[in-house]
View 1 (cartoon, rainbow, N blue to C red):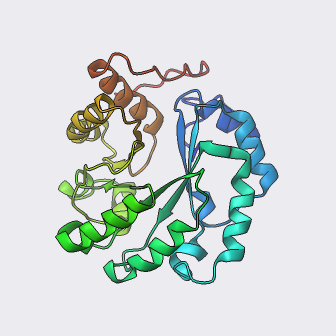
View 2: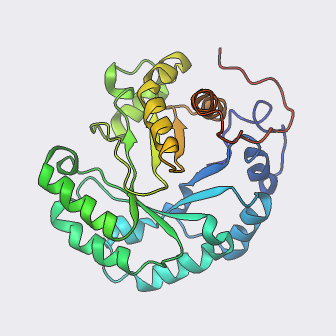
Length: 274
């Protein structure tokens, strides 16, 4: 997402037209999760405006449609996938195909995933997020999935909720998130040159920052290995997400001085974490 009700006047200029919000967001961060594509495939013309509002280094991690991953589980989805791939074509190689699977998609379903991944366009990067506990706790299931992903040059996307579930919720947003998000072990192994992390902290900026400390070392190590990771920082209310993302980048850059700086955002009201 690139807009939020709490962001105008803080991270985005106030009263900014919807068609210009992505451009403003791209001044804060150089990647975005395309979560809306899970619910509906956008019009190709709409996607073309996304491409026009962002520079060549900006990445779109676009979630595959729900009908493909959750409803039909890759069976008989040729029409839907052709429509989806045609819609996102204006993004070119800046698009990453994000396959998020439901918690019921387990080791017995991996063959279907393997067949599906083999049919995706070779020029597009692909990433898979699984939520079945066996993939994290059973070594055989872990090895099976890693083999399929490695064979398709696909990344395993960890969704790290360990910090969030460390203590009970204290806000309405945390209570809502508590009921929806998966509780899975933290995974820190990269399979490709472009690992992706999804990290969920707390509404407290201090707790969120304290909780991502293990990821600083992981991401620093990946960069020194020549990998190019993408990190998405979430909180239950996402009110401070852009500033938190930049804070994480700054902390990594302090360890890897050669890391390119993020773009400078448009001037708006001062955005602070504390």
